[in-house]
Image (tube, rainbow, N blue to C red; front, side, top):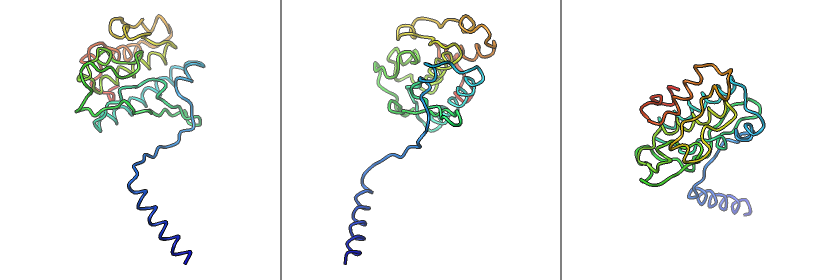
Length: 194
């Protein structure tokens, strides 16, 4: 009798659990890129590797019709053992075909694209994520953010990377500044192209 009650209760619980939505995430034993940057900026090779991996992750999101809208060091986990970066926190993400409303500003001010900062949610797309990744790449390469506040994103050009990291190869400065172009048409055609 007790065994049949057990199976009956288990079946009922299984049916109840089927109606509860849940999400399963991979556990990443690591620290945020924000924490890494507070201690010491990674070397150039590591910075390029992190940025390339995140560009691939963003491209995968864009290929599936999503725009992250909050790419920043605090939303990247660096796995302790492998050093592999993971893009996290899709809480502000939107579907590409249904971007946010005009006038809505969503994201983190120092990493937002100009179109996000201007409240032009209808113009936010994968190129906007590329801009945010470019701001993070700039910080990885120089140890400082290219923009300190929202108004800088809208009006100021970032200080040349060579002024902050004189030993930096010219090609990396060109790539980073192309990612940070004010006009979307002047950025790379996709994060995959980065």
